[in-house]
Length: 231
Image (cartoon, rainbow, N blue to C red; front, side, top):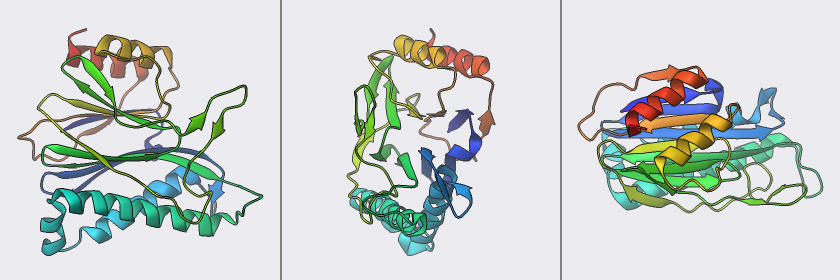
C-alpha cells in the first residue's frame, strides 16, 4: 500500500486497523469544535470510533465479512456526526460548523466507501476513472451544502463497495472534480487545482507493510501520479 498526501496532513487520516485492513479518510469544513477545526475533530473522532470497533480478535475477524465492514464504517460515522452536532451548539436556525467527509475502509481486496458533503472518492482502474461518491451540493450562484456532518443530530450513511486489483488507485479529494473519465484528464484536473487536497492510495494485493505516508509538494505529487499511469 503506497500512500501520498497533498495539502494539509491534519485533514487526512490513514490508519491500519488490522492485517490487510486500512481506513483512509479526508475531511473539509468550516467552524470549530471545542477549539479545534471541525475537519480535524471529525477525523480524530473517526479514528477513535474505528479503533474501538476493531479492538479484539473476535471483532477483527468479524470485520473481514463484507456486511460487518459496511456496518462498522456506517456506525462509526453516525457516532462521529452525533458527537460533532452535540459539541457544535447548533440548532435548526443556526449552523456554526459543518464538515464534509469521505472515507474508504479497505479490507483485503475490497474498498467500502461512505461519504457526506462536497469531498469525493475516485477509483483509477486501468487508465479509467470511476467516481465512487455523489456530490451533496446544490450548484448555483451560491452553492448550498445539502448533507454534511454536524448540522443535524442524525445522518444516514450508505456504503458502496468495489473490488480492487493490484495497481488500482483510490483518490480521496477535498473537492469533487468535473468531467474526469480517464487518468490523463484526472491528473490534469488535479494539476490545475493547485489548492486541491488529495489523499492518494495505490493498492497492492500482497502488501502487508506499514503505510509510508508522504507529504509531497504539488509538483512531485503530480509527477508520481504520471509515473503510475504512464502519462
